[in-house]
Amino acid sequence: MPVNSFDDYPMSWKPDLSRLTGPKYIALAELLESDIKSGKLKAGTKLPPQRELADFLDLNLSTITKVYKLCEQKGLLSASVGNGTYVSSDAAANPVLLCGKEDSHLIEMGAIVPFVTSNLKVKQYAEHLMKKPDALELFSYGAPEGTRRQRIAGVTWLQKSGLCTDPEHIVLAAAGQNGLTAALGTCFQTNDKIGTEPMTYPGVKTATKLFGIHLLPVRSCNCEMTEDGIRYAAQNENIKGLYVIPDYQNPTSHTMSLETRKMIATVAKEENLLVIEDGINHLLTERPLPPIASFAPEQVVYISSLSKTVSPGLRTAFIHVPAQYHEKLVTTLYSMNICIPPLLATVSATLIEDGAADEILAERRQGIMERNQIVDQLLEEFAMPCGLTSPLRLIQLPEYFTGKSFEICARQAGVEIYGAERFFVGNRTPEKTVRISVTTPPSVEILTEGLLRLRALLQQ
Image: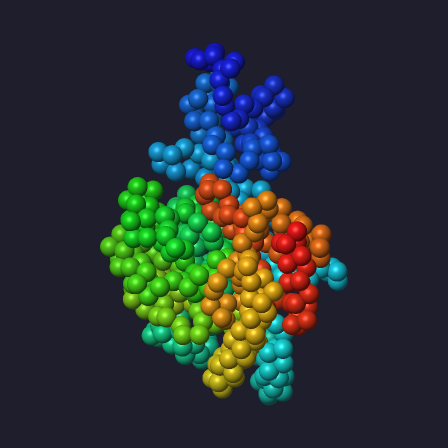
């Protein structure tokens, strides 16, 4: 029997066990998940302490611990030492942000995809390779980490970001998400905690859930992690590493200062943290700052993909990996891919060797700059400031909208965008913002039409 009387006791969740069947912890976990996804338990709701809930349900404490742990591993709950367990801010949000919906009435401004004009040069290079006598080899198996020629091209590409490395520290992956997932599976274990910004790229959330790794928001100031926040998380929350996007961070579009990059490198060494640095947008910046990896190459896995800078269809990423993780990362990538597609990796290497990748990159920067000027003009009072060549923008909403409600309204108006709820980590109340892509609409005219529809909603 329960120790206490709960007749008039305020509890955020009072599940009814009378209709549950099967093992109690599994049934309770399923009920908790259902109540969260249905909206019965709102984001940010603090759940009853485990002992309190166990007493209320007349169950063993270990049963409730299992229930909370199962839901935490699914990303539905966020627990913090000394602070309790909360429903995660993004518990009911769809983390998949990929265009491809065949809806001709919808202007896609959610997923971030570069405009297609530069793909003409990529197509020409692929056609040229296909005419060579050894073209059939491009459809065979390749080395799991890429050929030496491809890895040397990766060294050249990373040098443009300010990272001096060598082919022995370079591994190729089938694009950034593939490399990120492999790095997480290689360098961390189930139930490990990784610190990140309070709002972060949803792809890292789906990947960490795959391995049962927990993301923890690190205390930040002005969109940048603080030294005190990182050290507190390392010493009190036992985080094992950090995940950061220093340049045009997704979704805030913020670019990290040089001082913070150096600070993260120093703290990572002192606290023995592994940093996964996502350099997806690094070369889009007008004056790229040195990556964190340049200050602590043995503490950082640095991932640079061609998807946002050259062509999304090339599916090629170059990863700088510290020596102690190299062999294991290659094995992980082999388990995931067997090898990267030789055709795509060879086209990528050739574009870099010939300087064509630099030309495409310059065109991308110029095109993004022109599109951002249109965003600033049409959404002047709502678009948050950022660098001129950022492929994404954060839009501040009027008080009566939430990110989720505006996302729904925008979709009804024929525009796909993403609310802040999709990006939040932890249990904070999501900001009233949405993220838009300035590069995905295939033409400036379609971008303008999408922005006009959004402005009409914002000004209602």
